[in-house]
Image 1 (spheres, one colour):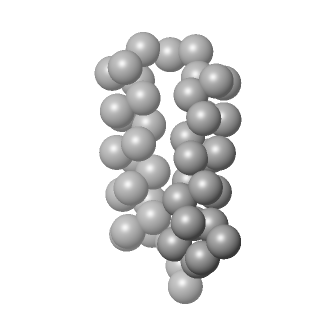
Image 2 (cartoon, rainbow, N blue to C red; image 1 turned 180 degrees about the horizontal axis):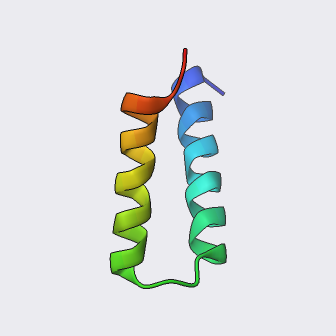
Image 3 (cartoon, rainbow, N blue to C red; image 1 turned 90 degrees about the vertical axis):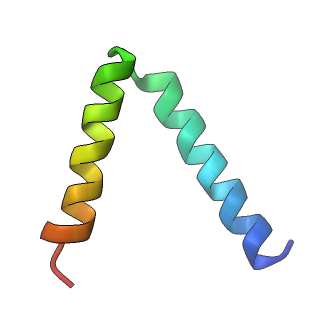
Length: 46
């Protein structure tokens, strides 16, 4: 399996896991993702 295919496989598994465990509304998912993106792009220490 190539690197890109492996990466997409991992991404799909993580999205499926997130989808199966989320109990909130679509709006709450959007809010959570926006907060995560902000953290990842602005707050995470390198």
